[in-house]
Structures are given as C-alpha cells and as structure tokens.
Length: 168
Image (cartoon, rainbow, N blue to C red; front, top):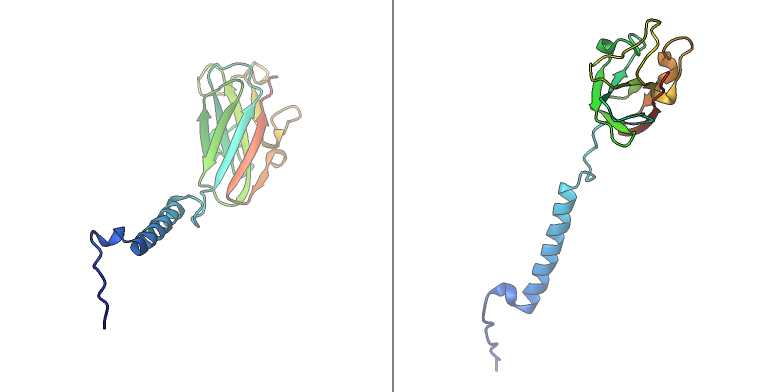
C-alpha cells in the first residue's frame, strides 16, 4: 500500500525546505555583491600622496602644492614639477593630494598664495612674503630647502604627509 502525499499548494519558494535554501542563497548573494562592490575586494587602491598642510595664518587665498621627482627646479620652478594641486583653506589647514604616481623618490613644496595671484610673492631681497613649506618640514639656509632634505621614498599605495607652513 503506497501512501500518497498531498501536493503542497502555492509557489515552491514558500515551501519550508525551499524557503531555507532561498534565504541562504539570498544571504550569499548579498555577501558576494558587497565583496564585488567594495574597493578592498582584491582591486588595488590607486597610488595616493595625501598632504596635510597646517599652520596657515588666515583663510585668504589658496594653498598651492607641487610634487617634484628630481632636484631640477625644486622648489622654485613649478614648471619642472610632475604634479600640481590647489586647495582651499579651512581652520588653518589645507589638503593637497597627488594620485597615480609610481614608486620613487619625491619632494613636495607648498606655499600660501594669500592674494590668489598664482605666484609666491617676495620682497626685494627675495624673501617670501607668503607662507612656504616643504615635505619633511625641510628648511633652507639662506634660501629654499634642497631637494634631498625634502625628499621621501614613495613605495606606492597611500602615503600621508604633514607640512607646517612657515612665514618669514
């Protein structure tokens, strides 16, 4: 004698055994979607040099930053820089970022362009009237700092630097 089972009514996903499988697959799908859309999911982060500038005496103008890969032109000749950034000032701080640069030796120069004329203003002796700074907080002796004093090794990924502006 064979006992006949009563067919379940309604859609198959409402059956208790199918409901458990549906929930498990749904949960797995959510996890996979989060992993694929997450920037940490195996895809490398772009190279980024993040520079925080502090010690700005006011919020006038902008901060102009330049990234150099060699001593040629550092820090005076911005045309020789491999990267440029411009930042607004907020509460005595500014942030410049350089992305997409490869592994290597670099130096950053910054200045507070208080009058927004795009150049570092100086007096008749060549002493800056606006605030200046360089990576490693390098200082020059009777002139701007040397590239080697400001240079840092960039190994890729993200590098955070802090520069304090000096007013002469």
